Length: 260
Ligand code: BTN
Image (cartoon, protein in one colour):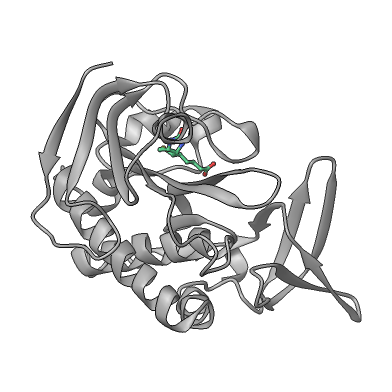
C-alpha cells in the first residue's frame, strides 16, 4: 500500500492543497475512517480491492480507469447538517462535469447518483464516525467512471452504468477532472458554511429532472410508486402516493425513462 503526495494546482479554502495518491488500497473511505488526518485530506486510489458502495454493495472498477477518491473532514462538523455533504458533493460533481463537457448534461438522481443519458456515471458514499455525543469525522467518497470502454458495461449487472469516455467519445484526463470536482466541492462547502443547506438544495433541484415525475422507490423487499414531489429541507424524498405525501429517507429510485 504505497502512496505518493501530489500537489494540486488549485487553492482551496476547506481542502488540503495536495492529494495522497495510492496505486492500490482497500477503500479510500475506509482508510480515512481508520486513520487520523488533517481536515480536508484528499485520498485518491487507482485501484480499490474492497471498494464499497451504498447499502453494503461493492464498488468495483478496473485499475487506472476511474476516479476513486475520498475527502475527510474532522473540523466544524456541527456547523452544517450531516446530510448536506451528500447533496453538495453530487452538486459539485454535476457542476464540474457541466463545466468540462458542455454537451453531456449530467443529472442528479436522489440521493446521490450522477447520470448521463439515464446511465450511472458516478456514485457517492458519505460515511461518518461518531461517539455517543458528537460526530468526529465525515468522509465523502466519490467513484466516477472515466475511461472504461463500452464493452466493460456489457455485463448484465453493469448495463445501467456508463463512463465519461463512452459518453464523450474519447479518453479523458483523470487528474484534470479530479481538480475541477475538488474546486467545485470547495465552493459548495463555502456556500453551505455561509448560507446553510437551502442554496445547495436549490442547486440540487435544478439538476434533477425527475421532480414532478412518476418514480418507484425500492427499499429491500418493499417498493412504492408515486410522484416525486420535491426534496424536503432535511434531504428526504417527498413522494405523493394517492392523496398523501410521504417522506422517505432511504431507498433506490427507479423511473420509466420513456416518460422523461
Ligand atoms: C454508490 O453506491 O453509488 C456509492 C459508490 C461510492 C464509491 C466510492 S469510490 C471511492 C470511495 N471509496 C469507497 O470504498 N467507496 C467510495
